Length: 239
Length: 114
Image 1: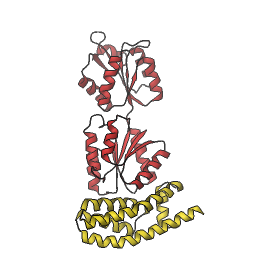
Image 2: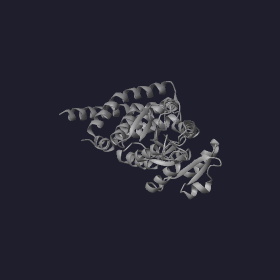
Image 3: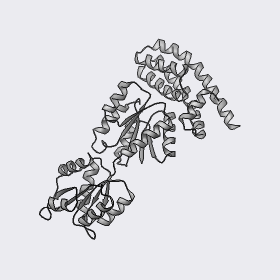
Image 4: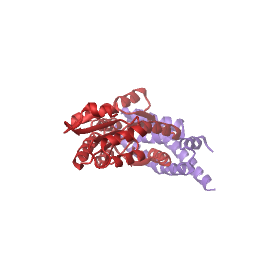
């Protein structure tokens, strides 16, 4: 689990980074919200952000609002951490979209308890499976721009291998693929991970929604697809 | 050991090495924060005074409640009100307390080497 800690106070930063690193979190630290935004612009995968509130030049509330206003970053859960303990501040943070609020001084037990709870809520990745590079790349980029963690698979077998090694929330697969096709992948997934939703996609006229739903798929999207349509359908499965 | 040490150790999950590093950070940082608060009071810079006091308060809170923490909180509150004269008086009361804490920390460091 990759965590970005945004904290200008070196004392608290040292404490938080040490505690998290000792407990299997991979930690990146930035001293200001502006530096954190620049870091996030590089597109590196961050699962959770822990941010101070009172920081020079940009405070934690403004940072949080910027994250929530950025499509690619809005889904990252943010834990606010501050010595500002008034109820008003906590409510303001939660209303701005923070997943939780940690009051300083940081205590190891409390920090780990909150982080583990948040880590449990971080949704898994979306697997995009398809035999055509153009399809996989297009859908992968569309989903990444919308803040999803995406794993691309060039075949049904690759998708199954990814399921074994990653936390997966959803599979979106083309029906036509080399080797194991979409229906075979669907059958394998439902046999072993019945709760993981699978959306099948195929060219218009090839298969109908009834065909794929009868085979056990959770949804069907015909190709060519419209980005908004795909995003809406995928969002529905995450809700 | 002093109460402050025990509170810090508890917050750090009993990690002696981490506590030793935190003590070094505190001892390196607090003189600069005193200077920042002093300068901010002289120059009537409320935001800078508030931020420096807030940072010091954040560190002190890890040693548990007490007068030193209370005085620092008071300076932070006075900064919001731009009450520089009063903040200056409180800072003069705070400085000897911080120096006493620094001496305590030096003794913790010495004890840990034995």
